[in-house]
Image (cartoon, rainbow, N blue to C red):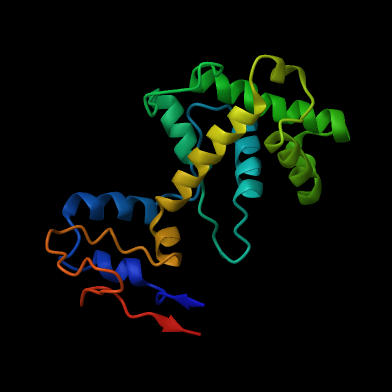
Length: 199
């Protein structure tokens, strides 16, 4: 497997190949406080979202996992969206309220416990039911669970790969966004791009 050297993103951010706006955004993500306090969700619902995100995006190899729940909380507080939604879906705030509540209902029906109290295997079972559109719970009568899962998965994926360390692990160096890329053909590499490390 080929990977970029550890520290590639931080090394790039220290160069003049990154515009100030991009540098500021990525450094804010790198230096985000670990003790984020939810502002949209109540503490219990936020903990539930964190637990769901940890099963959807497990990060066993990271000493400090990339936190995904803060981005959702901040977006819902601001009331922003991507400008469209399925006609069967309510607005995002309501969708998350119903969807996270539905996940807890499914956990209660299957195991008589809240989702956050389940073992990882049990949590995965509930997430699997949700992804398949087969999770029990009355909230799913008001919300199409397969659409909710699709939308939540897309948002968590976007949050994960917007983080510089996730970009580093896939070898993405597009944050070097100062104009001047010349070698854009297949298998051409700019001098500013890091060398691959072969293991």
